[in-house]
Image (tube, rainbow, N blue to C red; front, side, top):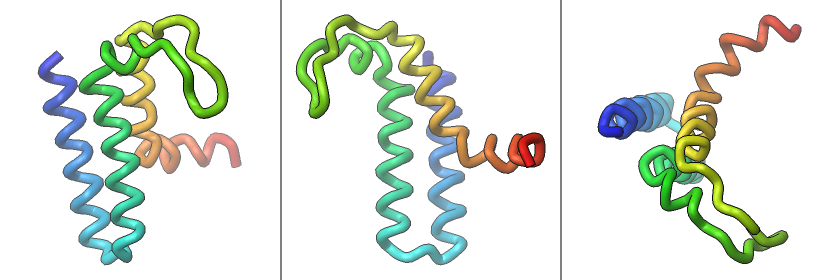
Length: 92
């Protein structure tokens, strides 16, 4: 599990450095950081986040989600900014 934390942290630092180098306004930096923190939480603490059962803002979570699935979805979310430019030409 350690490789997940190291590689996702590296990707997160890469994203933050790119945003800082492009000179994005502070609000854009905060939005990027919030997105990255959510993705890292899913990857690093997938078992704890998947084990949540209870009320949410819209409905209730009635059964736990496997931690490995939360981790995979966190990776997909984290890699969306890389995957979109790669696969976009296939749909145009």
